[in-house]
Image (cartoon, rainbow, N blue to C red; front, side):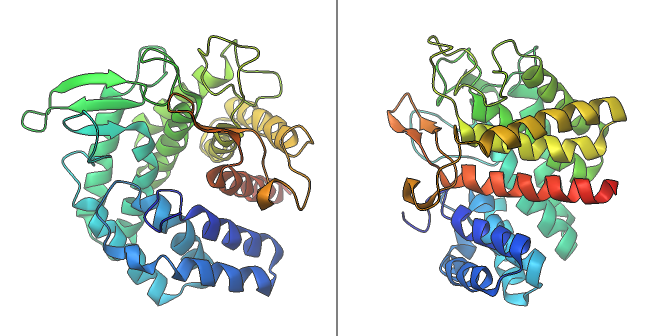
Length: 327
């Protein structure tokens, strides 16, 4: 893949998570190697996924090492991402005037971190402004989300709403729903704004109470896919959801926290089972089987995906630390 592919940061990020878990020098050496290869993206402004590309590798690396050069790359990346602000525009292609996708909630973490690290409050203001607009426009009355909202760049008016990677515009694309869950949980962590926590819990409520969420808690690729129960599952959506639920539990009252952790535990057991976890040495080296990228465009269908592995590892570490904190 090209360095500026939106998924490029997940492999170095996974290497840092493996080092975090094991303490082994071999994982640190590999993480430093693959993270360093992306340093040229520090001024990248071509799309909105700087948070994924830099935050996973350089972000995890800085958390674990405190390296000043990693901090510098991250701050440059955040400033570059901020240049796409009105709302943070997602794509510069396609038939849309000013497209913003729900995935973009994930990239706000880089802005929030950079604001805290540098004292540049403008970056957090951009993140909260974007989150507020997403909350207002991306979500339906039942807590489900559209994938994409297209805005008029001159007036800010909404031109249309779509679910580009889902089954239909009115359907609920599973990974988009989990991006929002993770993103609003993270924004509550960074701001302590009650409306973000309430919205994250609302999204969680939609997911956990949905009649088409399977018993093993690994969602179908779209909650409205026409061929359920034969529809493909999406382990990447499950991994993002699991990691988000573990963090959301730390901010929630005990009854909800137990519910969130109970679902996350089931997801971790399912993802770790032979049904979804690849045997060592197989699956191209990836951990998880059965992820879905973009069914409408017939791309990445029932395959391993780097971000599925990354959030699976993150969820395992978060769960381990939750157990330690209870002791």
